[in-house]
Image (cartoon, rainbow, N blue to C red; front, side):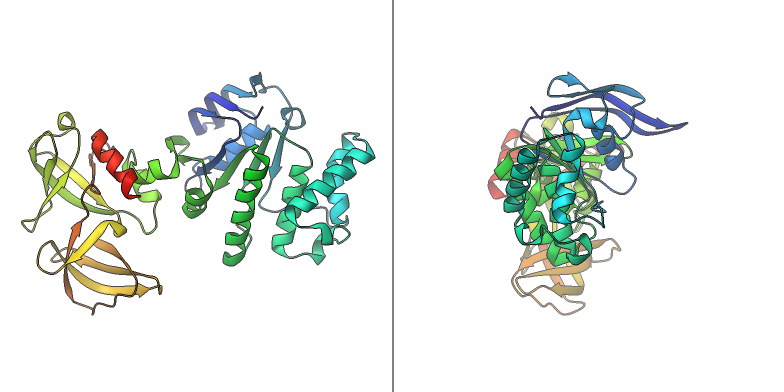
Amino acid sequence: MGNLKLTSVTKSFGALTVLHDIDLTIDNGKFVVFVGPSGCGKSTLLRIIAGLEDISAGGIEIGGRDVVQLSPAERKIAMVFQSYALYPHMSVRKNLAFGLENLKFKRSEIDTRIAEAARMLAIEPYLERKPRQLSGGQRQRVAIGRAIVRNPDIFLFDEPLSNLDAALRVQTRAEITRLHRQLRTTMIYVTHDQVEAMTMADEIVVLNGGRIEQVGTPLELFDNPRNLFVAGFLGSPRMNMLKGKVTAVGEAAAVIDVGYGVPLKARIDPAAAKVGQAVLVGIRPAHFAIGDSEGLPFVVQYHESLGTETYVYGTLEGRDEQIIVHQAGHFAPERGALLRIMPLPGRVHVFDPDSGLALPRTIEQRSAAHEHA
């Protein structure tokens, strides 16, 4: 079984600690994405799970077995690297067979596994070719096939799409997702690309500075980020942030003043806010409505039209912080135009500027966010 449990995992290189007390449980069959900026520890954590790096403290269990002292070969995992790591002098068939031959599998079993993997990945026509005769996408499929034939309990992917062009990344992303649906094997996937994380994962683990910031489904993290880092990292373009002050707290909502005589309502736990409290208000670009007369005064700097959608960049009147507003379809406001923008109901996030933590939202607010998703 491919369930994984990490308990207080810590990794240090000399005096430098790169992973701090990591606790994480991954259920069998899940597709889990580790995401975070460069240097956050996500690849190191993957290598620790694979057995390629030792831990400084903590425990690792795979399928209920303590694997801390086990070699990579004994852990029943298979890893797909960014660089493909194919043997250039071997055919595709030989690349797929090599690991199984070293493990002394019978030839009939090797042939069966290669045939099944080749069919799954649509690489049957390329089995007798050398890696240099393949495209980047085909080489990546061979690398994945080499993992499949091992029939592991857990697949580990270390930024497997970063060498591919944009169009091929989208295609291969879909192929890996389809493969997971077929195999229903646990997959752990490392990326710095939040779009890959949002589109592929059953669950996302957001890492920063060697610590887990939040774990949840893509929509849970998008709709209810627990802190400013998660709010800013997930979602493209980034979440807009406005400085504000709580002016009233009620059972149904708190009222927040961000200036311009336009009060914003946010459904947050009344016990978590007090009148006069300084806060940061977060609003995603897609969660603004543009009106004619009411709302925050938004001065247009420029816009990006993508055909089916438009991003408008600007500032609130008299301020310097950039604000991004999303509109469906084609929208072409003039540079310098003054628009009125208002957050959609139920789409205001509130953060403590000192701790960076989100103020707890009411159950009704969390439910409304999921209904609007």
